[in-house]
Image (cartoon, rainbow, N blue to C red):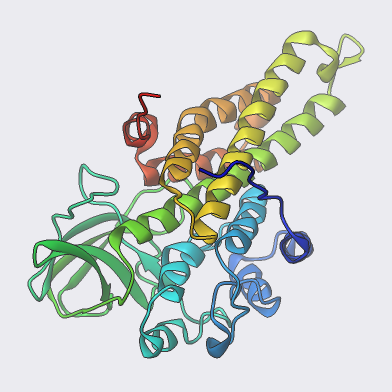
Amino acid sequence: MDLALDFAPDETQEAVVRLAAEVLDGTGDDPPERVWKALAQAGLLALAVPPESGGAGLGVVETCLTLAEIGRRAVPVPALALALGVLPVARATDAAQRAALLSGVAAGDTLLTAAVREPGDPMPARPRTTAAPLVSGVKVGVPYASRAHRILVPVSVDGGTAVAIVDPADAGVTLHRTHSSTGDPEYTVRLDGVAAELLSGVTVADLYRCTLAATCATGAGALAGALDRTSAHVGSREQFGKPLATFQAVAQQVADVYVAARTTHLAALAAAWRLGTGRPADTDLSVAAYWLASQGPPAMRTCHHLHGGVGLDVSYPLHRYSALVTDLVRLIGGAEYRLGEVPCSST
């Protein structure tokens, strides 16, 4: 057990945060495609891509810090693809496989995603989807499946599990668009005898860990962004000649949101640091995921409540944050499921 953990961002990671903030604030209300290209031009899509594939060769923490900044602004870009696709592939042991899959990622031209969810099970340890050797099964809630160059698919194979690499354009793949709170594209993916190779050196558990780290980081950013907007709102609106922020009940509710946002951020950062440094990360990831799933939605409801009618106006951006948190919590299975995944200890 580590007696002292220092997961404070180093100079490189602080530079990543500053750069991401600068790019995202500079793009303002630009269309998502332009924002994505701006992130690519700044090198932020290639942080985890190995140098031989045109990337920076960094890792989990740097990627998660970028995702947190994207979440802080609730920008509708395929941000999770950086972790659902790029992080696992960057860990693959086959250099040729890495090069083929990551080609175009740095420029924003290639998108990778993952199909981690199955009907009734957000992250099955033993997927019902099989590779024997053709891949067959059903995956749900797959983000950006129609735009992806390849989809990483957890499968059961030969008494164990593996991650298959599926081409969404294959004749055996059927994509059905499904609803998301943000309106971002996600799909039910039906696989009927699809030929696929297996991703070398990457386990299903590795893919799930990357998914949880990315989801928690993005959610932490979204909570922080919603808190910023709420604090600004109650500080500028007046009632009975006084700013709303000076009322004790309002201050207490803002404090509750602060605790939820700050704790989620620290839990997500600690989990990403452990995962990125090769330490055991399952407990930290489970705790961070449970905290986001259990505290994120009520914190967002408080933010809407403190905004009053403004919080329900679709022309005001707060709904983007609550929709994003809703989709992220659904991706990881919800609070009850995440609580069941937190390891128990008798000590």
